[in-house]
Image 1 (cartoon, rainbow, N blue to C red):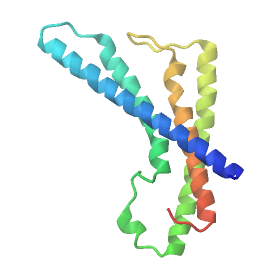
Image 2 (image 1 turned 90 degrees about the vertical axis):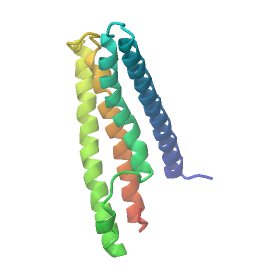
Image 3 (image 1 turned 60 degrees about the vertical axis):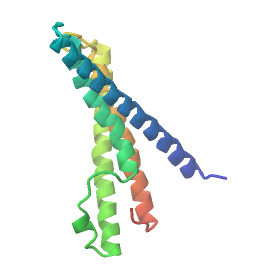
Image 4 (image 1 turned 90 degrees about the horizontal axis):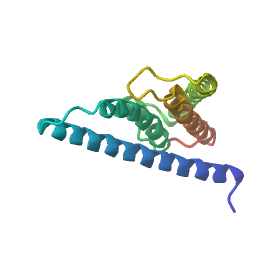
Length: 166
């Protein structure tokens, strides 16, 4: 039987995976529409204004949907030459320090992001662009990604307390 921590860990692991798949699908989508746009313009068609704007918004979501999965799988940037030069004790100390700082930064970003999204939703703020999307549609990427990363940093810190190096 799984403990509560294991169940929660599994749930967030699946959520991170599905968010990463959605981010990959968005990347495929923008690559496709840009290729179609370039081909269309080469054949004399007029430019579609929504392609650039959609690509820009998608890049924001790709970043915040994919980063929690990369953090969970330790596929983010690490300076290995420095990290491997430390003894195991120092690795755990720096790993714990990194986890705490990462958790605090991401938790603050998630909380402030939620406040901003709720405020933008309440005011009905729209972007001043061709498509004029609601601002909260774009801003919602921040609290989602930062919240999931905060959970991953917390998970790393618990792992560090158990004496397990990443």
